Length: 351
Image 1 (cartoon, rainbow, N blue to C red):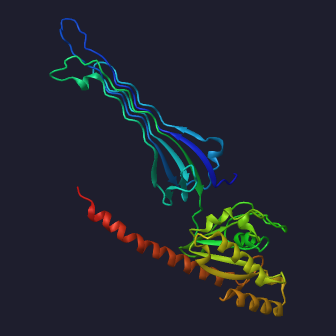
Image 2 (image 1 turned 120 degrees about the horizontal axis):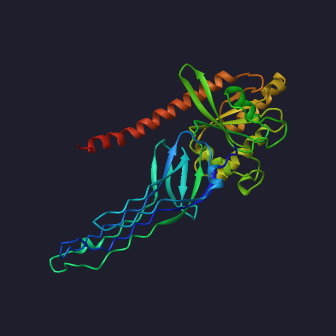
Image 3 (image 1 turned 90 degrees about the vertical axis):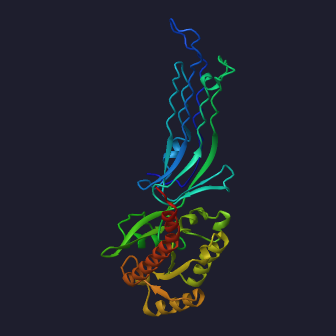
Protein backbone atom coordinates (compact mmCIF):
# COMPACT_ATOMS: atom_id res chain seq x y z
CA UNK A 1 0.00 0.00 0.00
CA UNK A 2 1.30 3.45 -0.89
CA UNK A 3 1.62 6.10 1.79
CA UNK A 4 -0.26 9.35 1.22
CA UNK A 5 -0.41 12.02 3.92
CA UNK A 6 -1.81 15.03 2.06
CA UNK A 7 -4.66 15.37 -0.42
CA UNK A 8 -7.41 17.72 -1.57
CA UNK A 9 -11.06 16.68 -1.77
CA UNK A 10 -14.30 18.33 -2.86
CA UNK A 11 -17.45 17.82 -0.81
CA UNK A 12 -21.06 18.76 -1.46
CA UNK A 13 -24.01 18.34 0.85
CA UNK A 14 -27.47 17.37 -0.35
CA UNK A 15 -29.93 20.02 -1.50
CA UNK A 16 -33.30 20.27 0.21
CA UNK A 17 -36.36 19.00 -1.63
CA UNK A 18 -38.94 21.44 -2.98
CA UNK A 19 -42.26 21.94 -1.23
CA UNK A 20 -45.34 20.68 -3.03
CA UNK A 21 -48.17 22.81 -4.41
CA UNK A 22 -51.25 20.61 -4.22
CA UNK A 23 -54.97 20.71 -3.39
CA UNK A 24 -57.22 17.99 -2.07
CA UNK A 25 -59.53 16.75 -4.80
CA UNK A 26 -61.92 14.00 -3.76
CA UNK A 27 -65.41 13.14 -4.83
CA UNK A 28 -68.16 14.56 -2.68
CA UNK A 29 -65.68 16.77 -0.79
CA UNK A 30 -66.10 20.42 -1.61
CA UNK A 31 -63.45 23.00 -0.80
CA UNK A 32 -60.83 20.35 -0.11
CA UNK A 33 -58.09 22.88 0.60
CA UNK A 34 -54.28 22.72 0.23
CA UNK A 35 -52.44 19.51 1.05
CA UNK A 36 -48.93 19.98 -0.37
CA UNK A 37 -46.23 18.41 1.83
CA UNK A 38 -42.79 19.75 2.74
CA UNK A 39 -39.60 18.74 0.97
CA UNK A 40 -37.05 16.50 2.69
CA UNK A 41 -33.77 17.82 4.09
CA UNK A 42 -30.53 17.20 2.21
CA UNK A 43 -27.83 14.95 3.68
CA UNK A 44 -24.84 16.32 5.60
CA UNK A 45 -21.18 15.52 4.85
CA UNK A 46 -19.16 14.43 7.90
CA UNK A 47 -15.51 13.51 8.43
CA UNK A 48 -14.86 10.82 11.05
CA UNK A 49 -11.58 9.49 12.47
CA UNK A 50 -11.32 5.68 12.49
CA UNK A 51 -8.63 3.37 13.84
CA UNK A 52 -8.28 0.92 10.97
CA UNK A 53 -6.73 3.42 8.52
CA UNK A 54 -3.16 4.73 8.44
CA UNK A 55 -2.96 6.55 5.10
CA UNK A 56 -5.06 8.81 2.86
CA UNK A 57 -4.43 6.69 -0.24
CA UNK A 58 -8.19 6.11 -0.75
CA UNK A 59 -8.59 9.78 -1.62
CA UNK A 60 -6.04 9.70 -4.41
CA UNK A 61 -8.54 7.85 -6.61
CA UNK A 62 -11.72 9.59 -5.48
CA UNK A 63 -11.74 13.29 -4.68
CA UNK A 64 -15.42 14.22 -5.11
CA UNK A 65 -17.98 13.36 -2.43
CA UNK A 66 -21.66 14.23 -2.55
CA UNK A 67 -24.46 13.54 -0.09
CA UNK A 68 -28.00 12.66 -1.17
CA UNK A 69 -30.54 15.34 -2.01
CA UNK A 70 -33.84 15.53 -0.16
CA UNK A 71 -36.92 14.32 -2.03
CA UNK A 72 -39.65 16.84 -2.94
CA UNK A 73 -42.91 16.91 -1.00
CA UNK A 74 -46.07 15.33 -2.42
CA UNK A 75 -49.82 15.73 -2.19
CA UNK A 76 -51.91 14.39 0.68
CA UNK A 77 -49.49 16.16 3.07
CA UNK A 78 -46.70 13.70 2.35
CA UNK A 79 -43.27 14.98 3.35
CA UNK A 80 -40.35 14.09 1.07
CA UNK A 81 -37.68 11.70 2.32
CA UNK A 82 -34.51 13.24 3.72
CA UNK A 83 -31.22 12.51 1.99
CA UNK A 84 -28.72 10.17 3.66
CA UNK A 85 -25.68 11.67 5.35
CA UNK A 86 -22.25 10.93 3.86
CA UNK A 87 -19.44 10.00 6.28
CA UNK A 88 -15.85 10.36 5.01
CA UNK A 89 -13.60 8.09 7.08
CA UNK A 90 -10.04 9.31 7.71
CA UNK A 91 -7.15 8.01 9.84
CA UNK A 92 -6.77 9.16 13.43
CA UNK A 93 -4.48 12.18 13.44
CA UNK A 94 -5.92 13.81 10.30
CA UNK A 95 -6.09 17.58 10.17
CA UNK A 96 -8.66 19.26 7.92
CA UNK A 97 -7.86 22.65 6.40
CA UNK A 98 -9.72 25.16 4.26
CA UNK A 99 -8.75 25.54 0.61
CA UNK A 100 -6.03 28.05 1.56
CA UNK A 101 -4.23 25.24 3.49
CA UNK A 102 -3.79 27.59 6.46
CA UNK A 103 -7.18 27.81 8.18
CA UNK A 104 -7.62 24.74 10.39
CA UNK A 105 -11.17 23.34 10.45
CA UNK A 106 -10.59 20.37 12.75
CA UNK A 107 -7.88 18.13 14.19
CA UNK A 108 -9.27 14.60 14.50
CA UNK A 109 -6.85 13.03 16.98
CA UNK A 110 -9.29 10.71 18.77
CA UNK A 111 -11.07 7.62 17.35
CA UNK A 112 -14.72 8.34 16.63
CA UNK A 113 -14.25 12.12 16.58
CA UNK A 114 -16.41 13.84 13.94
CA UNK A 115 -16.67 17.20 12.22
CA UNK A 116 -19.37 18.59 9.94
CA UNK A 117 -17.86 19.61 6.59
CA UNK A 118 -21.01 20.57 4.65
CA UNK A 119 -24.53 21.05 6.00
CA UNK A 120 -27.47 19.73 4.00
CA UNK A 121 -30.11 22.14 2.78
CA UNK A 122 -33.48 22.37 4.50
CA UNK A 123 -36.57 21.21 2.63
CA UNK A 124 -39.01 23.78 1.29
CA UNK A 125 -42.50 24.29 2.75
CA UNK A 126 -45.50 22.93 0.90
CA UNK A 127 -48.55 25.09 0.36
CA UNK A 128 -50.33 23.46 3.32
CA UNK A 129 -47.96 25.47 5.54
CA UNK A 130 -49.34 28.77 4.21
CA UNK A 131 -53.02 28.07 4.90
CA UNK A 132 -54.63 30.64 7.17
CA UNK A 133 -58.04 32.03 8.03
CA UNK A 134 -57.64 34.72 5.40
CA UNK A 135 -55.85 32.62 2.78
CA UNK A 136 -57.81 29.40 2.37
CA UNK A 137 -56.23 28.35 -0.91
CA UNK A 138 -52.55 29.40 -0.94
CA UNK A 139 -50.82 28.89 -4.25
CA UNK A 140 -47.35 29.16 -2.86
CA UNK A 141 -44.64 26.57 -2.07
CA UNK A 142 -40.99 27.15 -1.16
CA UNK A 143 -38.04 25.63 -3.02
CA UNK A 144 -35.54 23.61 -1.03
CA UNK A 145 -32.35 25.24 0.21
CA UNK A 146 -29.36 24.69 -2.12
CA UNK A 147 -26.47 22.35 -1.38
CA UNK A 148 -23.27 23.57 0.25
CA UNK A 149 -20.04 23.01 -1.67
CA UNK A 150 -16.58 23.09 -0.15
CA UNK A 151 -12.97 22.28 -1.02
CA UNK A 152 -10.82 21.04 1.85
CA UNK A 153 -7.32 19.67 2.37
CA UNK A 154 -6.68 16.54 4.42
CA UNK A 155 -3.29 16.36 6.11
CA UNK A 156 -2.28 13.30 8.13
CA UNK A 157 0.01 13.50 11.15
CA UNK A 158 0.75 10.07 12.53
CA UNK A 159 0.04 9.40 16.19
CA UNK A 160 3.25 8.17 17.86
CA UNK A 161 4.85 8.44 21.31
CA UNK A 162 8.47 8.76 20.18
CA UNK A 163 9.84 10.23 16.93
CA UNK A 164 13.02 8.87 15.32
CA UNK A 165 15.28 11.45 13.64
CA UNK A 166 18.69 11.57 12.03
CA UNK A 167 20.65 12.02 8.83
CA UNK A 168 20.19 9.51 5.99
CA UNK A 169 21.92 6.20 6.76
CA UNK A 170 22.03 6.93 10.50
CA UNK A 171 20.52 3.49 11.11
CA UNK A 172 16.95 4.59 11.92
CA UNK A 173 15.20 1.85 9.92
CA UNK A 174 17.58 -0.79 11.30
CA UNK A 175 16.81 0.39 14.82
CA UNK A 176 13.04 0.34 14.18
CA UNK A 177 13.24 -3.16 12.74
CA UNK A 178 15.33 -4.36 15.70
CA UNK A 179 13.02 -3.10 18.46
CA UNK A 180 9.61 -3.69 16.86
CA UNK A 181 7.81 -6.01 14.46
CA UNK A 182 7.92 -3.37 11.70
CA UNK A 183 9.76 -4.32 8.52
CA UNK A 184 11.03 -1.09 6.95
CA UNK A 185 13.22 -1.15 3.88
CA UNK A 186 16.90 -1.29 4.86
CA UNK A 187 19.80 -0.70 2.44
CA UNK A 188 23.29 0.84 2.36
CA UNK A 189 22.39 3.95 0.37
CA UNK A 190 20.84 7.28 1.46
CA UNK A 191 17.09 7.92 1.42
CA UNK A 192 16.12 4.27 1.63
CA UNK A 193 13.13 5.39 3.68
CA UNK A 194 10.76 7.38 1.47
CA UNK A 195 7.76 7.60 3.80
CA UNK A 196 7.17 7.35 7.58
CA UNK A 197 7.06 3.96 9.25
CA UNK A 198 5.41 3.08 12.55
CA UNK A 199 6.39 0.31 14.93
CA UNK A 200 5.02 -0.82 18.31
CA UNK A 201 7.87 -1.35 20.77
CA UNK A 202 7.07 -3.79 23.59
CA UNK A 203 9.30 -3.17 26.61
CA UNK A 204 7.67 -5.46 29.16
CA UNK A 205 4.40 -7.00 30.24
CA UNK A 206 1.69 -4.45 29.42
CA UNK A 207 4.29 -1.82 28.48
CA UNK A 208 4.57 -0.58 24.92
CA UNK A 209 4.92 2.63 22.93
CA UNK A 210 4.68 3.64 19.27
CA UNK A 211 7.87 4.66 17.47
CA UNK A 212 7.74 6.72 14.26
CA UNK A 213 10.62 6.64 11.77
CA UNK A 214 10.65 9.43 9.17
CA UNK A 215 12.90 9.90 6.11
CA UNK A 216 16.35 11.33 6.85
CA UNK A 217 17.03 15.05 6.95
CA UNK A 218 19.94 16.77 5.22
CA UNK A 219 21.19 20.34 5.32
CA UNK A 220 18.71 22.60 3.55
CA UNK A 221 15.76 20.22 4.01
CA UNK A 222 13.55 23.16 5.04
CA UNK A 223 14.25 24.65 1.60
CA UNK A 224 13.36 21.43 -0.20
CA UNK A 225 16.76 19.70 -0.31
CA UNK A 226 16.56 15.93 -0.45
CA UNK A 227 13.06 14.80 0.47
CA UNK A 228 12.56 18.08 2.34
CA UNK A 229 10.95 18.47 5.75
CA UNK A 230 7.32 17.69 4.86
CA UNK A 231 7.42 14.50 6.95
CA UNK A 232 8.46 16.34 10.12
CA UNK A 233 4.77 16.96 10.76
CA UNK A 234 4.46 13.29 11.70
CA UNK A 235 6.60 13.78 14.82
CA UNK A 236 4.93 17.01 16.00
CA UNK A 237 2.63 15.03 18.32
CA UNK A 238 5.40 12.90 19.83
CA UNK A 239 6.29 13.13 23.52
CA UNK A 240 10.03 13.02 22.76
CA UNK A 241 12.50 12.67 19.91
CA UNK A 242 15.16 9.98 19.58
CA UNK A 243 18.07 11.46 17.61
CA UNK A 244 20.35 8.82 16.10
CA UNK A 245 23.84 9.83 14.99
CA UNK A 246 25.98 7.56 12.81
CA UNK A 247 29.09 6.82 14.86
CA UNK A 248 31.11 5.68 11.83
CA UNK A 249 31.36 9.19 10.38
CA UNK A 250 34.18 11.52 11.37
CA UNK A 251 32.16 14.63 12.33
CA UNK A 252 29.43 13.39 14.65
CA UNK A 253 28.99 16.85 16.16
CA UNK A 254 28.41 18.38 12.73
CA UNK A 255 25.86 15.68 11.89
CA UNK A 256 23.96 16.44 15.11
CA UNK A 257 23.97 20.19 14.48
CA UNK A 258 22.70 19.73 10.91
CA UNK A 259 19.55 17.95 12.08
CA UNK A 260 19.01 20.39 14.95
CA UNK A 261 19.28 23.30 12.52
CA UNK A 262 16.54 21.79 10.36
CA UNK A 263 14.28 21.31 13.40
CA UNK A 264 14.71 24.95 14.38
CA UNK A 265 14.05 26.11 10.81
CA UNK A 266 10.88 24.00 10.66
CA UNK A 267 9.48 25.42 13.91
CA UNK A 268 6.15 24.12 15.31
CA UNK A 269 7.86 23.52 18.67
CA UNK A 270 9.94 20.54 17.50
CA UNK A 271 13.22 22.08 18.66
CA UNK A 272 11.79 22.41 22.18
CA UNK A 273 10.73 18.79 22.57
CA UNK A 274 12.56 16.44 24.92
CA UNK A 275 15.42 14.83 23.01
CA UNK A 276 17.31 11.59 23.59
CA UNK A 277 20.64 11.39 21.72
CA UNK A 278 22.21 8.07 20.77
CA UNK A 279 25.49 7.29 19.04
CA UNK A 280 24.66 4.40 16.71
CA UNK A 281 26.72 1.69 14.96
CA UNK A 282 29.25 1.35 17.78
CA UNK A 283 29.81 -2.29 16.78
CA UNK A 284 31.97 -0.91 13.94
CA UNK A 285 34.13 1.24 16.25
CA UNK A 286 37.01 0.61 18.62
CA UNK A 287 36.59 1.47 22.33
CA UNK A 288 38.85 4.52 21.85
CA UNK A 289 36.77 5.79 18.92
CA UNK A 290 33.56 5.28 20.87
CA UNK A 291 34.79 7.38 23.80
CA UNK A 292 36.17 10.09 21.55
CA UNK A 293 33.01 10.50 19.47
CA UNK A 294 30.73 10.15 22.45
CA UNK A 295 32.57 13.01 24.16
CA UNK A 296 32.38 15.19 21.03
CA UNK A 297 28.67 14.52 20.63
CA UNK A 298 27.92 15.08 24.31
CA UNK A 299 29.72 18.44 24.23
CA UNK A 300 27.58 19.81 21.41
CA UNK A 301 24.29 18.16 22.50
CA UNK A 302 24.79 19.14 26.17
CA UNK A 303 23.10 15.96 27.36
CA UNK A 304 23.84 12.34 28.08
CA UNK A 305 24.63 10.31 24.96
CA UNK A 306 23.62 6.64 24.67
CA UNK A 307 25.94 4.31 22.79
CA UNK A 308 24.02 1.67 20.87
CA UNK A 309 24.04 -0.61 17.87
CA UNK A 310 20.74 -1.40 16.25
CA UNK A 311 22.22 -4.21 14.18
CA UNK A 312 23.97 -5.92 17.12
CA UNK A 313 21.38 -5.05 19.82
CA UNK A 314 24.03 -3.36 21.97
CA UNK A 315 22.75 -0.87 24.56
CA UNK A 316 19.16 -1.16 23.31
CA UNK A 317 17.29 -2.16 26.48
CA UNK A 318 18.38 0.75 28.75
CA UNK A 319 17.47 3.18 25.96
CA UNK A 320 14.04 1.59 25.48
CA UNK A 321 13.41 1.79 29.22
CA UNK A 322 14.05 5.54 29.21
CA UNK A 323 11.82 6.03 26.14
CA UNK A 324 9.05 4.02 27.82
CA UNK A 325 9.25 6.30 30.88
CA UNK A 326 8.93 9.40 28.71
CA UNK A 327 5.93 7.94 26.88
CA UNK A 328 4.25 6.98 30.18
CA UNK A 329 4.79 10.44 31.67
CA UNK A 330 3.38 12.07 28.55
CA UNK A 331 0.23 9.94 28.65
CA UNK A 332 -0.29 10.69 32.35
CA UNK A 333 0.08 14.44 31.71
CA UNK A 334 -2.44 14.22 28.88
CA UNK A 335 -4.97 12.43 31.08
CA UNK A 336 -4.55 15.03 33.84
CA UNK A 337 -5.03 17.87 31.38
CA UNK A 338 -8.13 16.21 29.93
CA UNK A 339 -9.71 15.34 33.31
CA UNK A 340 -11.17 18.84 34.09
CA UNK A 341 -12.90 18.98 30.71
CA UNK A 342 -14.48 15.57 31.25
CA UNK A 343 -15.55 16.56 34.76
CA UNK A 344 -17.22 19.69 33.45
CA UNK A 345 -19.09 17.67 30.86
CA UNK A 346 -20.45 15.34 33.57
CA UNK A 347 -21.48 18.22 35.81
CA UNK A 348 -23.28 20.04 33.02
CA UNK A 349 -25.23 16.98 31.93
CA UNK A 350 -28.89 16.88 32.95
CA UNK A 351 -31.52 14.21 32.26
